[in-house]
Image (cartoon, rainbow, N blue to C red; front, side, top):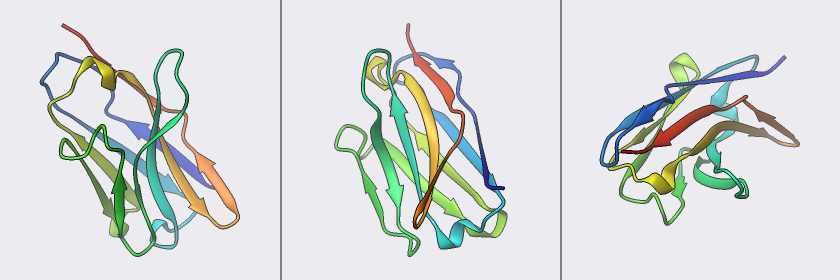
Length: 115
């Protein structure tokens, strides 16, 4: 059974930094497209960053230059380093693993950016 568990979300002031972690079990992330998505209150789910199984990473325009995706195949973990956070980054962040044709999701971790 594939499980994704996110951690690291909390409240932070504007301009602050956070690092989210997603621990994966039940499958090898080296074979998966891995990504971070988020949903703000009243908003649609949106892609934040996604890595192919070969390690190519794409970012949403709104986070490019501030967020950094990393993949550590050795411990089956992905991370999202988030810097210079703004209130617009407030959302529940979800870890995603796509292994064709299956899509797996974590339960999410809440990030709140507020002064």
